[in-house]
Image (cartoon, rainbow, N blue to C red; front, side, top):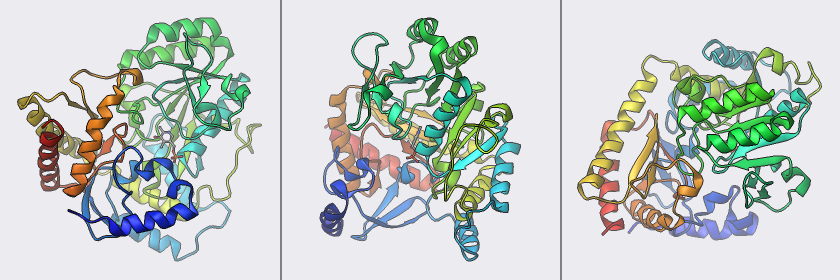
Length: 430
Ligand SMILES: *Cc1c(COP(=O)(O)O)cnc(C)c1O
């Protein structure tokens, strides 16, 4: 048995300092067993906890670490940059360099504003859409997460396209009333809703690759329907690419589906493990942002040089030839080993995946909407998670979270990982 004594003691201590012992809720391991791991070190695809246990990591800090932990080029550039100071509150050349790199290599981005988190990017994008259109209403989809933005912590109420309910205390009802929540993968309901209230809608926001509530891959036709309806009614289409950006390719889901949104938000990978977010749009839309335009948005540490350095060193490596095809081929090989084993044994599971993202669904049916996930299947995940920890494999601590493969995972690591997952599946279904 791997001991978690030190993690356990640190967690007990942390509970005195932080609500629930954590600074972000899902870290508390509430939906799996035991205390959360306190990680002291990461290298490549491995992390080491305070008890000295090593784990093959498929969480990768929830997505940002597409190059794995402690990537040498990122570390060296960050150290070089930090040795000259950490923050100036002025523009920097490094900010220009990251901006230029993004714009030159992404046909969907004309102008950028850097911020410090995905939430901040989305919050600002919503304000921009409202400022640009002069409208208030936002349409979002059940099963998409957009950070802890007040007007987006809303789930569907009962009845068709009625006003939603907030999913957090502390959100005024008047905010919630501006948000309409629809199910994913339902073009009919979307069309009906837009025909009724489209001219009050500032924006439709979606994760084009919904990856925060399982991996709810949409048909391209649904995303095209959003594009069409936004054009028709003068609403803006926001692709929240905080996870999908730089993950399925340098140009993210927009290029994968070849659909041009009006505003794109980024986070996670863009900062290479440092706090960076961004919202991007055409020059025309971005000209509404202060100081050019009337939509106010600012940040003391925005485009901080150390964070810019980490982002730059990351994105540079993603532009290397065949980076994405190699990563995807590795991921597909890994998934196939697990799926083949499950198929041979007729287990009720399959893996949904795109690029280097994967999600284990405990059903054989393709899942496209949040309501299709059976909450009872999470009991199986809990067993899987526990057994994997005992064998040195770390998945995000919830069955609704997706897994990530990084460039630092070798074929050998992935073979070992797949074997251990198969061994644990035999226990889950045993
Ligand atoms: C993670 C995430 C966010 C929030 O980003 P933070 O950096 O955690 O604030 C927003 N949208 C999507 C799609 C995300 O995956």
